[in-house]
Length: 368
Image 1 (cartoon, rainbow, N blue to C red):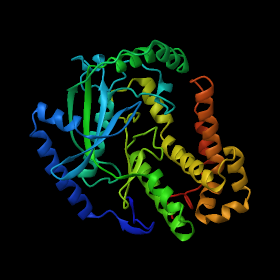
Image 2 (tube, rainbow, N blue to C red):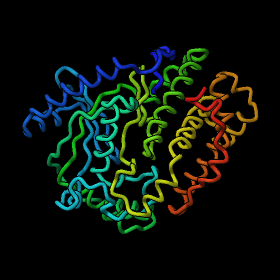
Image 3 (cartoon, rainbow, N blue to C red):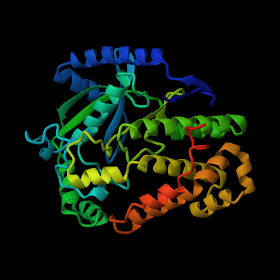
């Protein structure tokens, strides 16, 4: 069940059967339309799409199919992943270190894992079991132009990742990829960052209502993943979307699920990180809110000031309550991330410390 958020920050109740039915009907129609295109027509559609951005996970764009806006993501498909033995595989085919799972610049473990996650989440939505994920309408492999890596940039990236030979090979093959995996998905118009920024800027009850509902929807989305054993590892405010009503988690480049072809070490890693997303999203929310309450101030000091009862927090009662409740946990997660970025990538994940800092359910976003 996911909170439904109105454009004014109010709530319209939970997503009902009509929402699921409408999304499923649109999925059926657009999937059929896209499947009917031959490769040449499909490639023309994708290449004519309006670019939205390029990042470490691939290129994104917006297009229109049968009069409906769609979101397009193009993920490099490496030569190793295209080998017959690895086609469609969710295994760690590059032998990447487990610390590459953290969202501190990782390019992910492979395009097939991202596709597998979208297939899972779309199935959950269409079955009426979940609602917090954009639907995947169609996917297809297309050719791509390779671009040899710049040696200096490759060397710098490899050093950042502790000199891992597996990471070096992954980055080299991504740059030289001669194919792309194209994902055509449900279009959600706003990131949570964009939507919340506009409403928090209005202040007062509008801001508090928007914070409350986004926090609840975000937590509910994380709960939908957690109950199914999935860990996203990168559910930050630019990867969480809204249409003004629902809150949806997207961009599964780092996601892990028990159904993947995981080795024993990966299964232990996944089990140890079962609660990672709820800790991480609480951290993101605290960091985002404290930046608005105390702009320009060093983050750790700002969090501690709000937790201690800083008068500036009176500008938003709801923001202050969230920071007060989750501030200590957010500081511990921030320290962990700082260790990953500035120190060895083998910095231990502080699972036990975070579990001790997690508040009781009462007052937690998404709970009464």
